[in-house]
Length: 316
Length: 47
Image (cartoon, rainbow over all chains, first blue to last red; front, side, top):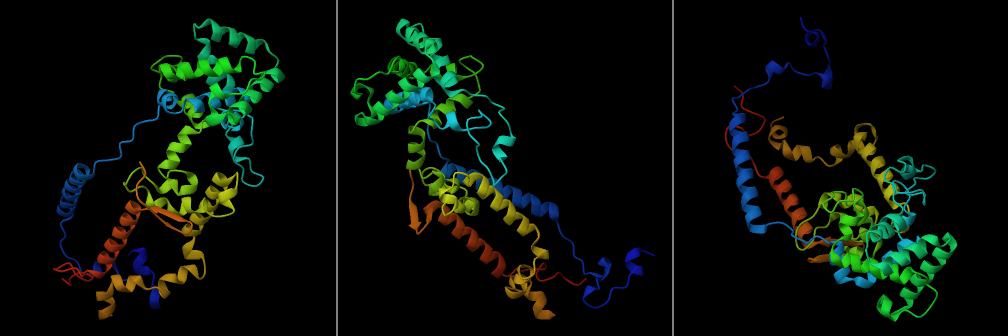
């Protein structure tokens, strides 16, 4: 005698024995094979007709060719310590608190696991390889100067670039910028040669595979964001949902990216952590739907299931 | 390059994503409304 047969539930809890249900033969392998073949044919046909997005990757040499003034401004910003990466916090440095959720310093908890000193690692170290005597002399002057002097030079040059027409270094007003203009222009020259990507790789080899520093540098400039925004990929453009061109993107991300578009998240410095926290809360709510009064009754008020099993309901 | 987008208040959605969402809604409605035929219809054959 089984446990099930010893229990005698009554009323709506009564569950018939599984052997009492009607049965019929069903070829699951046939259905699986037909579905697989149909999906394969459909995938190949759609790929042949529509292909996939084929945007050219943005490289540092491409950046130098398309927006040289932005390269100079970014290098100067790295020296002045005013770029995004300079104040990013974990995992690159301790310069900022990063994303927090109320009193919880979520980003700081991860620690500095990929230490990056933007001025040193993104600008000065790659230039040290240069054999150019003018660049070497400028780097020596920079290294010999006290930190306050370096900040004064780089900040003054950064402000002068901002004031110049189109940020063109040639249009910068005369001033006390120390070696910064030479360093920045040498940096642009290095980027134009195509050697910067390899020089930024911490492994030190031209064919290294760690693009972290190159991407940090690129993201510190305005060019990358401009390119992203031109393709509706910005965070405040529902970018998480979008794909370049006329290709469909990730519509299932609608709720996650929706919060970034509305207050208070749209203007919050901690939107990433806050939106994540809210989505975790909503996910918990979804998991607990059967236990939430009112929400768990929605299927009774919107009886879609009666439509799906309408044959059964018609007969019972 | 940028594709075609529809703007409606705070909503900024690509036409391609709208088409995908519309197709998903249509497929869902078809799956609910189109009757199954043959021996597998309803809640199974009594045998």
